[in-house]
Picture 1: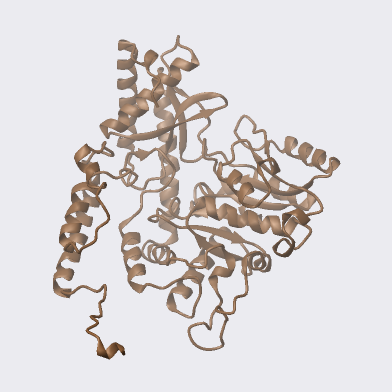
Picture 2: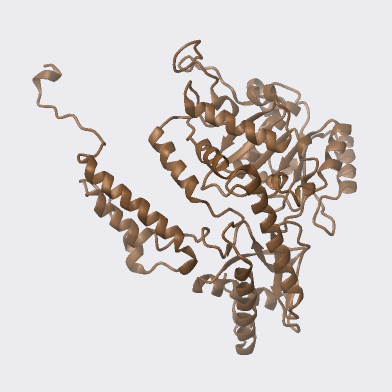
Length: 497
């Protein structure tokens, strides 16, 4: 029996009625514009009622549902309950607020449908152009390579994997880490992001291979302590391999002395990796680019484009000075992925510079945003965020009940409500309750952290929609809620997180 002899009905995922789909898609765009345009008028966040949660408890769909009904579920249950990071008073985590052009680009990227693992196509050229632009922004040489990844953690892992392989002393791709003649040591300040521990585990080195160096009073890596540790490791037969400098720590926004660390790495023969996920793009900011002087000297650099460039999630980038080392760390030959001199495979495979063979078209949103706004606009927005952090710092200084907990270097401010006369445990409970009440009322979102053993609130102003009046409101609410809690003694009994 042949296929022609059957009543086989061929199907497709394309709409059966393109006109109706067009009308619904236009409605979605209109709703999206209204959603962004009115974001300031809505609560930043609100707890989902049980009726909304129930919408996500259904069984696996087996039969079709009209698309307009599917969209109705989204408008009823999804859109009213976001994380809140597009709201102008979201400062809880350092992640960016997105933008409409980037959202349109993600739609167009999905319509284009290209897999950016490799291929001779326009999307691949956009990707190469974007990584070239980022390379130029950072002051890396023309021969340096770059790859777009899903975010800062993976960007750091890519750079550190190149560092490990370059410093191992053996061909790790063939021999594995057991063949290394010496254990490798990586160094970072005690303010380093936790993703670097994940990197050590993924690289087969273990957490012990990452040595935390004490930070100074400004929360920067203590270079004297670093030099002492390097000498001690050599004396004990451990090979110093890489210094991880941080350009913008997560806790306080502090920036290590990048130039001095670059000098040390050059003198000691170490790889210099910079975690620039928070601060790297300060290079675009005319008033503050001096803060990251030396970033162009790194051997590898990780940065987040959904932070400094406010791109929609997700897109990060790794730059590596030595393109050859970058490629030989990741490239593998496969009989089904051979480069041709003509046709679709007549281009370099982009997956040779990262872990994922399948890669989405992340570059398009960055390309469109930079084309539309220009790099100078993003630099001014970064300066704006830092100026707003300095403004908030000034407001805190005027209030006797507020206590600043760390220097304000970039756009992160650490402070707490402190009425005096209560211990650290009670202060933690008090400020935690202030934080949660602001979230639950939808007025503002800040996070908390611990700085030099003391708990505090943390405001990360990575948000192009924030205005100084929002920061005025934040201070007012912290003072109001804190004073009410002290008056009613709720804080002393609250241990909730």
